[in-house]
Image (cartoon, one colour):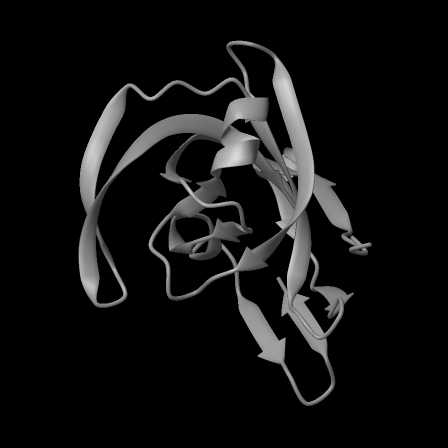
Length: 141
């Protein structure tokens, strides 16, 4: 199971809601995974799972089985670039909890194959992330 450790310092007097101290995570089964919670706020459905931090992806990608568990609709379609190709796929907007932060109205894309959740740069760019493969550690601040 993914281990999640984060310390948040509240500084409301300075007008700062949270400042993240650097969090350290061990790789899980040699992979840099982190626990996230995907939220369909309309239907009040939540799904907690381990996800890959994918610096090569511009957006969050959700596999078909989790898409349907969350009750997400296929209302919007877009052409997206993938490795070596362009594909048409569905997208929608959800809330996502990552390191005790709730990101609202996050664009997520549908993957018609069973697989992994990918957290892309639309979330990752808000953090400083270091992958230490030699020591199987992930540092997020």
